Length: 303
Ligand code: NCD
Image 1 (cartoon, rainbow, N blue to C red):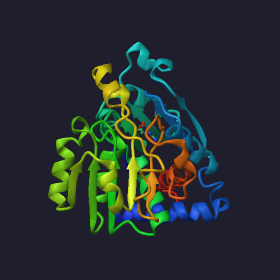
Image 2: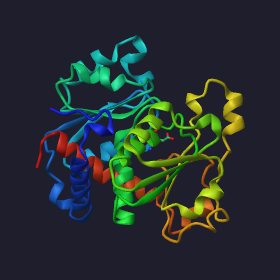
Image 3: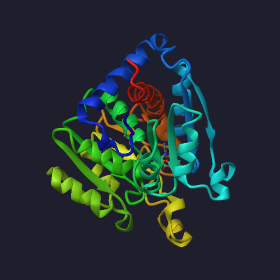
Image 4: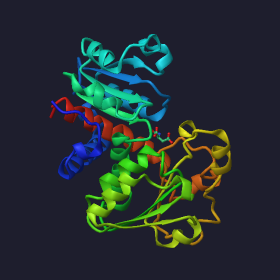
């Protein structure tokens, strides 16, 4: 039995296979309609979500399974003081697989310790978000045809943005990847991410100007400033509009740049960019459904 807590819980081969299955699901969804008949997915979301929770639910429904769960800590027994570990042990009586999001870093590890069903981390605090990374990798491979030989710009809140941390950890394992980390100085990636990049020997650098970095990028991964993880509101207000991507800033970009964003967007991509063929963030949300279907099948051991 396997859990998915961190993207490195999967080998590169397994990730590539999941994307292959996601592509097959995209091409032939009818072959998958009954794969999870009589299986139940629980979505336990102690923190807000639109895409991640609904794409998990849509994924399970597309496989013929059923879903149950809650979408806020306030509507669960966590509000009465129940521990994560007890919630998981109880949910095992009602479901075959669980996707959990929690504001505390490490909560899914605690939840998985005694779990007898597969547990998927759907985001833990400012730490990791492995299924968003599977979504990102699927999008990149579909748009660029490869997961190697890429210059990847990550822009925005690189400190608290968990999708950034997981994406870097995943991309480190592919050939000839270079990272350009674009953020205000206060919002640079945490030390453990820098150590991982150094250990892997990839090329990376930190810059503050999006315009300067633009011409060399193959992928531009925009992110939201993570308001809920700031200690004081003044800092958030000062930093929230650090980067706003618009058509003018794209003038020096490559013609085949791919713009990604895990969403939700607040202000960091102006809506005029949405109609540019390089804007792939809504397509990315679709990719998330397919690869989560592939992941559910994999973790349940269904061929
Ligand atoms: C991201 C998250 O929850 O970390 N959203 C998502 O899952 N698509 C990004 C964000 O909230 O900024």
